[in-house]
Image (tube, rainbow, N blue to C red; front, side):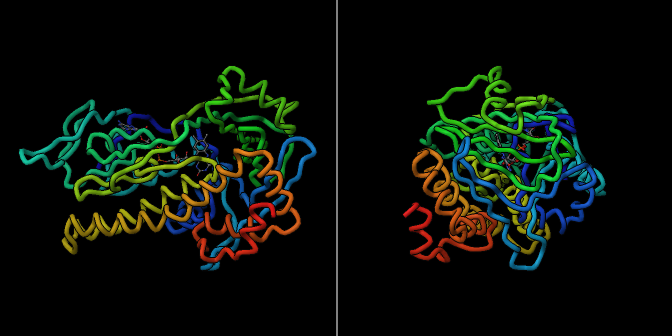
Length: 364
Ligand SMILES: Cc1cc2nc3c(=O)[nH]c(=O)nc-3n(C[C@H](O)[C@H](O)[C@H](O)COP(=O)(O)OP(=O)(O)OC[C@H]3O[C@@H](n4cnc5c(N)ncnc54)[C@H](O)[C@@H]3O)c2cc1C
């Protein structure tokens, strides 16, 4: 296996840096949980939703996984997290990591089938190409797997702040008018603060620090130590996540919005699924077509319900009145919101939401 990345690790990227509990479960299976924790990653045990100022707030603990693992996620710097993953690949005897090398296109045979990639260094022949090249995946476009999206433009900025406080073990989401703030502990005394917003409330990167200090109470006396880094046009769609020659994983395989903070966990779950099917193909136990069909089914299973949670979260977040009512009701009875968090973790489905819980979510 050859892993090619245009970046040199450790590299940073705009991210909320919260790894949801199902992602932590994958890390444990890969025996990478302890190395990630050793980088200073912070356990995250739930999410607090609030409105600005003295508005309502509610805390929802992460649900216990059905298989009995711990009910906790992690807040971790992407520089550290991705470096641990890349180091693990480096230790694999049959894997080669090539950094600072950009993939520039797909190589096809005379019949048009993909048989490798070209890079800034050379051409690499491959039986399978896995495109894990992120939100604006070029592999997706080159392979003709991109589907149109007509979603509203959203963008985000994320920066790191040195804070005095310690012991924070929850992500805090502040639903402000037309934008959301996310705070996550990602290291000792280090807080990640990101803003997600739409076109109607443009915020320039150079205003990020002053606006964050004004709107996020815990930052008033804090220093911005890195960033902000930005990302935009979150909503990406694919015709299919795998066509038998090219398989797409993570954001490259379609994405909705960072609002539910599960992109890393979903990426790891999809990587597990694609690996299983490709091992079967390369071992001669299944055909390309079957591997693609199975991955497409698994992909749908991993993302379908989570996408509905994201749509619901975006719907509530866009209306301060609706989100206020939902937070107020959840403050009195957090079961419905807890169920949404459980669905987003893949532990329950929308079929488990009762009529009464739908009314609670609607603030009725
Ligand atoms: C503001 C914001 C907040 C977020 N908050 C969270 C959160 O709290 N929790 C969460 O789980 N997710 C969050 N996300 C989403 C999360 O960042 C993504 O879902 C996740 O990083 C996707 O991982 P990936 O491996 O698919 O892509 P990436 O992490 O983007 O990695 C893609 C890699 O491909 C490489 N690459 C790209 N093009 C090429 C090329 N042509 N040749 C070679 N290499 C290439 C890049 O260098 C990069 O290393 C957030 C995103 C944003 C923007």
